[in-house]
Each structure stands twice: as structure tokens, then as C-alpha cells.
Length: 149
Image (cartoon, rainbow, N blue to C red; front, side, top):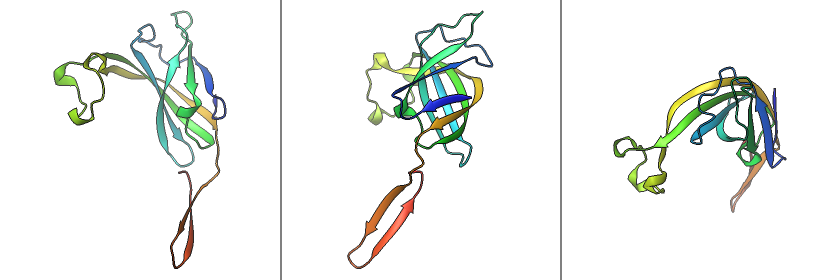
């Protein structure tokens, strides 16, 4: 089981994936963790920075993950690790709306060859403190409690 802690700035995780990485040696590779909370099925995704170079004899992958990317709620999560290779885009294949594009064309990269390489479980230590939103009108006071953001 993977242990991640929201109070640590950088979490280091080492995995032996079910399928060996085929893009790890590429400088244009991207690894995405998709986590689904077991309790309420909320899903979020974040990337991990690969800090080692796996080999055929040692396919271990070690990632640094920023705490700011982790979900805020404590609990058990189902983890899916995907890898992809980024490549330069062509004019016909760039899917970003022109009005939303905020990148130099030479830096526009698209994902190709995405595939799942591991499934795992994780415990994320965060916070289960509810977020309180107070709504007060001029003629009455009503308090509503919202959970999980």
C-alpha cells in the first residue's frame, strides 16, 4: 500500500509496476496517478516526477509527488498509474480551442501511447475537517454545513 502525506511538501513513492514502463527512458514521458476514494468514489488525477531510470532487471519506478497535488481528504484510495509519451503536435491534431491556447506552438505537446501500468491501493493522510460556509441574510441567520469542499 502506498503511503502519502498531505503535510509533507514532497512525497517519494517507489512502485514495482504490474507492466514495465516503455516510456521511462524518454525525457518526454508523463506519469499520471488517478486516485478514487473508497468511501465516496471521488476521483482526482495528478502527475508524478520520475526520479530514477528503471532497467530490465530492476523495473522499479520512484516518483516525487508534490503534496499540493494530493486530494485533501484522508482515507483509502484506489490508484491507477498510467504512462504516456508527449510529442510535438501537428496543426490538424491540436485539440485546444484557439481562444484558450496559452502556449508557444513549439511547446505544444500532446499525449500519445497512453497505457495503464499499475493498480494499487493508497492511504492519503490529509484532513477530514469539514468546510463551513456561513450564509447570513439581513432578516435571518442560516448556517449550512458543506462537506468535502
